[in-house]
Image (cartoon, rainbow, N blue to C red; front, side, top):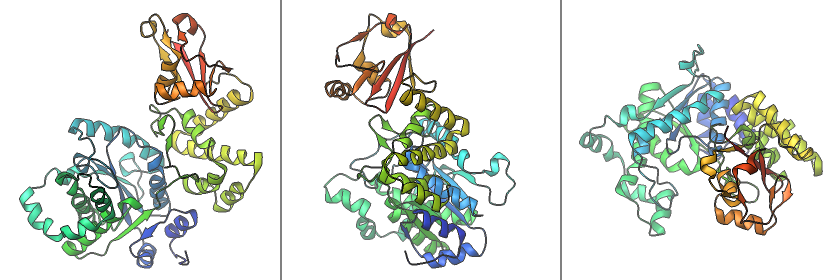
Length: 421
């Protein structure tokens, strides 16, 4: 990018690789230079925890606040009832209000690790706000909304957005409920601008159409100048979507994925991604990120440990990062059990007359299905107590768990199975 921004926020995010698109980069830069700016990112409550795929934009909000601006985390208590159709092949399952509220409770825990909120006692003018769009969306009168807001939207234009067009081109059904999502998200931006002076919406590049709709609506209704900014959709160097592993999503809540497993995910970063991920997911200076990312051979492993420690410290704290590193050294260098390995606890009743080793690999999260487990055994990728194991028919009894049983999938993924006291 040839543009050289004057504002700290844009300078930092451009050099660290956060920027994909901006509706008017130079005008936004000028706006940021005049004083504190308020921006938001929305999060629909489709699960009880955020995952690694959300972490890029959480770091974006963190840099936004660290450069003197006010971030808003907008929880989608209202929009989750509709479901974002963007680039999906089918409609999202509809959740009850109780499920949505429970998911929001689970998601909110992560944000406080990265942002300073006004509700948490910070007196800073740029203290972050945690809002819920159900506050205004649940109160809408349908006929008034159609007349006052719906008239500003062209169906022809809405059909041209890639997120909708790709679904229709594949002749996959798009319900009228889902079609309303982009109008509701646009209305969020209008309400945040009206209530809180919010002038910037940020999000992943798959949200570009929804963001542009909100900008157009706010200009038409309030005649206010507002902006949109997106981050790139992140893939690993081998083309995989960021945040997926054999065991499933990399959750950010510690009760859904242990700090050790989270640390290990980053330690297993490919050589080619290490420098880029240091820039995006840590606060290590850019020059140091580039130096570490350029290391080769066994030296790059030290950079990966720095990456894992820095990212884990931000989310779970320095003690959790240190414990995870110590466990990794114990497991890999000394062949031991490690104090921090993910652990599956089973009662004698659950085990009964015996439980298959395949089930233990699935239930411990090392594989997603029994079929994957059997393939692992057939390919010599399974170990039990550090010994190669090929018998997928083995039954484990309560007596076998007198001492913890260590399961390994390949060289880097391990879990313990223990008997409940």
